[in-house]
Image (tube, rainbow, N blue to C red; front, side, top):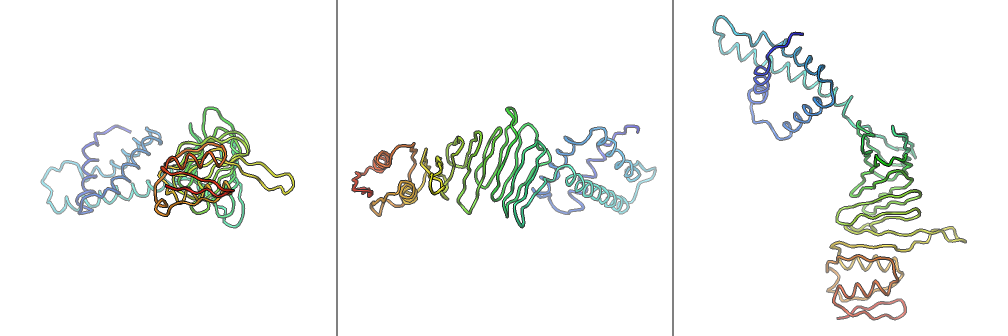
Length: 315
């Protein structure tokens, strides 16, 4: 097809759609959608195909923009302009929808009635637990393998030293190179349980936590809180025994900090009522309850007294 100078014509049609057909200033959302369509189409579709498609569309409009021998009445020009703009809008709408659905719309998998296994293009397997939803972009696997998860799922990730696998969940993400782990999300309570390999877990307001096998990351249902627990099965009961490996708080109320420490150390903390809403930022590593309570008292500027399993904080 012979190349023709359609640059000015294309700009004119776009302005008609923007100013005359809509009869109002283009909205930010429309502008964003148009830019996304343009950028994605030009990036991912064959350039020759795009050029030929553009020429075919504009060729069908050429008769409306050819220079007339006699002046064209303004009402006819406006009628042709509306017709041309309508054709372009229709083509862009239909083509955009088909292109988006075929090439860009993410794939979504949902476990509606029970567990569901999803086999990914890189060989990884995701077991969605009931009610969970997994969303995967068309670009997967790509240089970085990224998926989005709602609910609970167990991941068995194919190993790759050069292509990290990232699970984006509600307010936190898990990054791995190849491993088996479980993500749980129940309301505000989030956790990652590692079975094999290594993972890095990050959430807003906290440092990245690195897990080893049989360790669990959790926020205890509290924002800006992160803990790593070591899990070991008890011989007789078969239940898992948990032990704090690390614990961090970033601008968390002392009331919530005390609740977490009481639950995990099986202790009771008595403190002045006016301290309940004081914001705490602290990092604790392993160690016994005595050491961490001493550190907490120092942060608050209080004295700590212990009697049996009761810790009393005083001014």
